[in-house]
Image (spheres, rainbow, N blue to C red):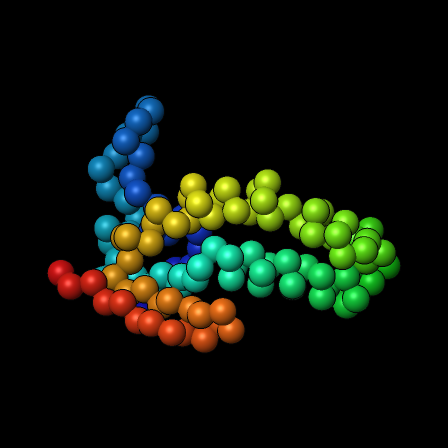
Length: 121
């Protein structure tokens, strides 16, 4: 059993450039799973976690993130860079890989799996 996890394991092959290939890493998988959720839920989970970290891990004087501990909610949401970095990455790079998975676990607003979708071969 080998388990690979990451953002790029289901990425399609490169079809342009000097290192063009029809093969992709996921071509060698027997089975792949994609954990999915609505973008609105992912954003809320991300921002909620960032706000919660201000009063825990970010308070460590040695932490790189210490500077975020004193931000108010509005400032923290802006600094969390969801709209400018994380959402575009989700839409452009992560969501397109969903169709390559054999099984999709669809999570609901409370992080519970609400639906299981199995692709027939």
